[in-house]
Image (cartoon, rainbow over all chains, first blue to last red; front, side, top):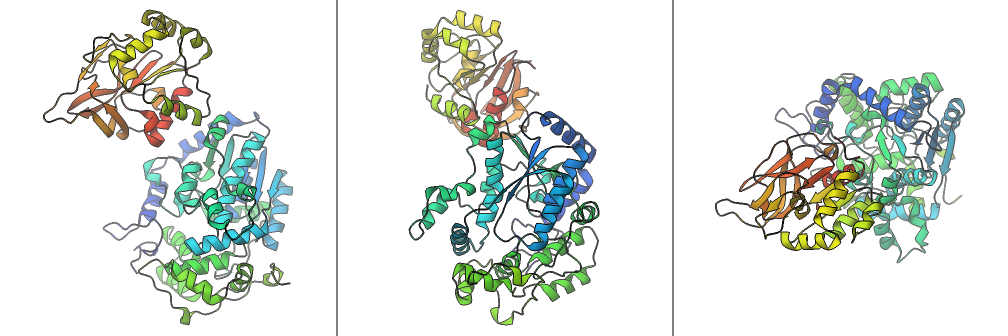
Amino acid sequence: MKQCSKCGLPETYETIEYDNEGVCNICRQQDYRDESIDWDKKKDQLDELVSKYRGKHAYDCIVPFSGGKDSTFTLNYLVKEYGLKPLVVQFNHGFMRPILKENNERTFKKLGVDVHSFTPNWRVVKRLMLEALIRKGDFCWHCHTGIFAYPMQVALRYQVPLIFWGEPSSEYTAYYDVRDEEEELVDETRFNRYVNLGITAEDMAGMIKSDFELDPRDLDPYTYPPLRELKKLKYRSVCLGSYIPWDVKKQSKLIMDELGWKGDQVEGMPWELYPYEKIECYMQGVRDYIKYLKRGYSRVSQMMALDLRKDRISKNDAAQLVNDYEGRRPPSLDLFLEYLGLTEDEFNQIVLKTVVPPFQPDFDKLENAPKTWDFDQWFRENN
Amino acid sequence: MGNLTSVSNAVYEMGEDPIWISNLEQLDDVTHLILPGVGHYSNAFVNLNSIGTAAQLVQILSSRQIPVLGVCLGMQLMMEDSEEGDGKGLGLIPGKCNLLQGENLRLPHVGWNQVVVQKDHPVLEDVKSDRDFYFVHSYASTQITEPWVIATSFHGQKFASIIAKDNFIGMQFHPEKSQTNGLRIIENFINWDGKW
């Protein structure tokens, strides 16, 4: 497969394009971000934004929160840098891990914040996962739509117009290009552009109602609220990373030092090197595994890309790590198959239909990834 | 006029509650006025006159200083007059309209075309120059009368696609049919206090 000459991301990576020098558009927009954006001016804009909304509503802002490094950093920054009173909104996707829960409790208590937590119906979640897997080879529809739609509903319920997300998607993809000088607003346009995989909650209801006893209200948590209601609220839904330069490595260290935030082992990742990445979901290993089967790379390559761009790793070392860790079958796949009532062969057949050429997976050559320390604590359908 | 519902829907989506007015007294209830319009200059003028006399309307709009947006024919009605028919415009913004000219020029000018911003205006906040907007018209203001021209476009010849004076702004294209940038313009207009 063709790869970026700088960061190594392959041609199956979403939104990727290469220029004459073989460098990808995501590297190029990172260069622009680092060299051409006036971050002092951006910080002034952030000051202005915060002062415009401070003290005027039930809360100064909503902070959608998974407990991963990015949302934890965002919350920490807003509380400490600006002394804001946020409402933290947590959408529980169903796979929160023990260390993550401890982290969350510690973060909330140390920072002193109000928290609104929501967990959707597990029976519905399972059906949504199956449908999204079959149609798109991506079972995370319930989480991604819920994470982005539900906090907007909470913003309306509490009439809080300012919503702070963390990392902009332009750190990883080119759905938004920082070179356009178009602010990445976290709105319904973005939701429909890629978050919901082209499937709205209404579409989803139509897809599953024939074989699932669906209450019409079951999909409310995944439904983006009407634009008119948000406009009436005069909402502003922005990424903190549009105003300050995002650096996951530095920020992870900062929350570890200031909040005692802990990293974790993640299936398929080099545990010692990247303890901070994607620790919030125990289905992360399955997500990455599917990504590998479809596109020939996984989270390891993405972490290498970030570090190669910042010259934090040599190309040889990066290639070695990819070789050692990528494409291993995660132990969590057994749980996933139990939840969805699929055999592994059925799973493979579904995923095969969504493979992105020119990659072709070879199921015979796959090795197993090791179990993480908390594997035995994860929910089993049959216990 | 043909685009009333589209304009009304766009305003509604932006969180406001549009009303359609049919007499001058109702003007007391509005904070912003939009003159939409697809149709014939003379007919539109007759319609306007059925609401009240043009002179009364001009007097109210100028004295109350409420922001007024003219769309397409609505923009042309804000000007002094047009070759199309024999009605007079309201004369809120200087200028007049004539049939677009050009060799083998296809009329009406229908579809997406570039709008080149010449001058800042609060209603264009966060809208970049050279973006495409949706047009449907045959007549336009081709005598570019400074300083009222905010943006220009080209179809056979250069014409004014946005004009503004005081609390009045007119657009030859249809913001209500122009997707994200068009809705941004409508939202900016709703939030505009009529000053710049």
